[in-house]
Image (cartoon, rainbow, N blue to C red; front, side, top):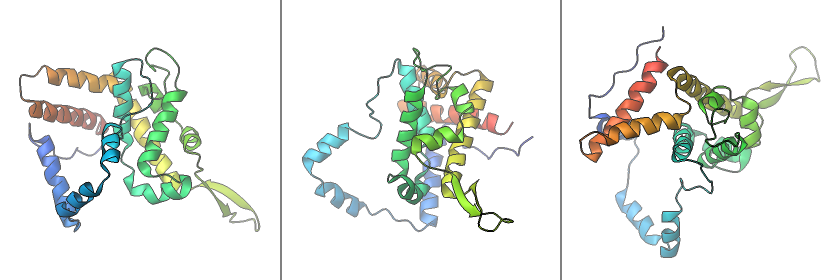
Length: 233
């Protein structure tokens, strides 16, 4: 039995409490948000560039999805893995690109490599089964990196051996653990992929006779409760 899950916000306050926590962490870390500097930066942008980029944002991809659920699944897994900003420097050193660009590259690789069925379905690398059985070699191959570092053999002078270590190995193992745990949780709950679960929650929220803001908070609450109920089994 794992440790007890952390206390959760009261019903209807998930988004508000998350914002409060983020504000508290920012202030405790001495990070200031200078709104005048933000305004100055926005005012300095070229209008044509701004108009072009505002419609070609970071979640608009040159991919053809067979179904809405397939696209939801892609975006859901993207959101799941888009937590590697602390590794920007190692990513740039190893690949020449930042953290988000590498997460996108990984998603593209997993999606394109999936079985070409009507749903990118049960055999797809972005399915529950695909995430659960993902391996380090696949991630390394898509990123074009190695998790091995050459180190001197402790007993054989002049001989080096490759061992999994270093910051890129740390990143690969982190992504691997998140994907495998998510895939296992989804399969245990009977979901084919993360998109199927998210779509189900969104449909339930849409049926609630409450304001849009309350619907959004309910979605966050359901995802949080569901993931924690499995993480702490």
